[in-house]
Amino acid sequence: MNSKQCGNCGREISAATRVGEKCPHCGVRFDFERQSQNRGIRRPADRSVLVLIIIVLLLTLAVTLPGLIIKHHKAGMAVRTQQE
Image (cartoon, rainbow, N blue to C red; front, side):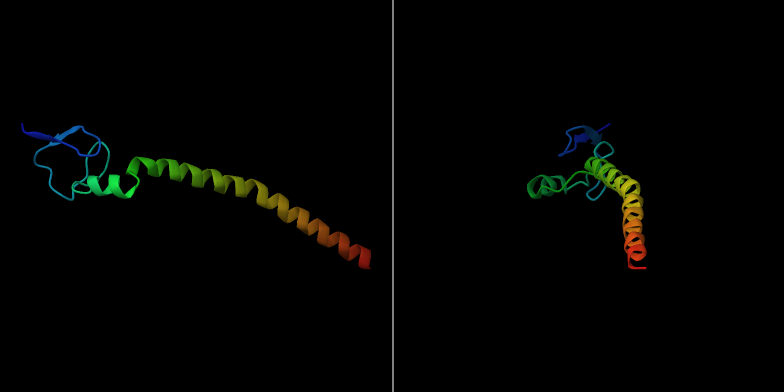
C-alpha cells in the first residue's frame, strides 16, 4: 500500500488522499497545511481549547449575572422606599 506524509503532523496517510480532503490525524486539509503554518491559522485541535474558554466564560456569566441583577434591583427598591 502506498502512503505519504501529512505536511502538518507528519503522520502517514493513504496515497489515495486527494487535495481538499482532511488528514485523519490532525484534520488539516491537504494543500492547506503550508498556508496554515505561514498565516498562523489554528489547527482544528485548537478549536477544543476555544470551545472550553467560551464555556467557562458563559458559566461565569450565568453565575455572576443573577447576583448583579438582584443587587441592582435591591438598590432600586431602596431608592424608592426613601422617596416615599
